[in-house]
Image (tube, rainbow, N blue to C red; front, side, top):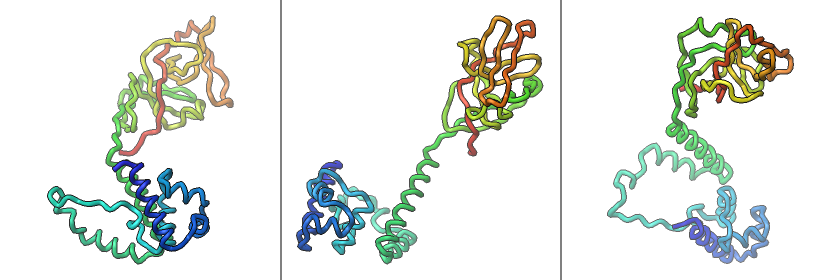
Length: 251
C-alpha cells in the first residue's frame, strides 16, 4: 500500500468519524486548532495529518489513534511466530503508555522516535581510520620531520589524501580549528590562494599561499596574524595541498 492509498483511507476515516459526531469541517478544525481547508485536504487524501494532528483527531473523536489507520491483515502462514506475542518488557511499556494523557503520549512518541533515530545512526555509521603522522603548525611552526609516530583517529567520511597532520594554533581559524586534522594531497603547486602545507626553514605551516617573484607569501585566515614571506633562497617547499579538515570522532 503506497502513501497515496494510506492518505486516502485516513482521510475517509476522518470524514466518517466527523460525520458520526455531527460536526462540520469548520467545527472539527476549531476543536483541534487547524483550518477548515486543512480538514478538507485530509478528507480528500490530498495531505496526510502529522503525528501530533493524528493524536488530536483521535482525542477529539474519543478513539484510539490506531482506528484512523488502515487495518493490516497478517498472513498467518508467513507471520513470524516470535513476533505474535510481545515480550514482557514491551507489554509493560504498552500497558503504561495507554494510561497516559494524549499530551504525554505525544512526548513518549517523540522521545521514542529520537531514540530509534539515534540507535539507527549508531548501527549504520561507519567510522574511517586515519593515521595522523605530522604535527604541522598553524601558528608558530613545528619541525614535522622530528615526529614520525602517528596517532590513530576516526571520522565518518573517507576522504582521499596522502598525509594527515595535526593542526596547532588559531592562525587558520575559523576554517582550521586548533586540534583538528588537516588532510593533504601530494599534488605540488596548484594555484594561488589555495591552502597548502609548506616546509620552510625546518618548520612546517598550513597557510593560504601565493607565489611571488621573490618567494612564497604565507597568509593566515585569522586577521590577527601577519603574513609570512619565505624567500626562494631559503628553499621553501610545498608539501601538498590541503584537501580536507575534520575534528576526530570517538569510536
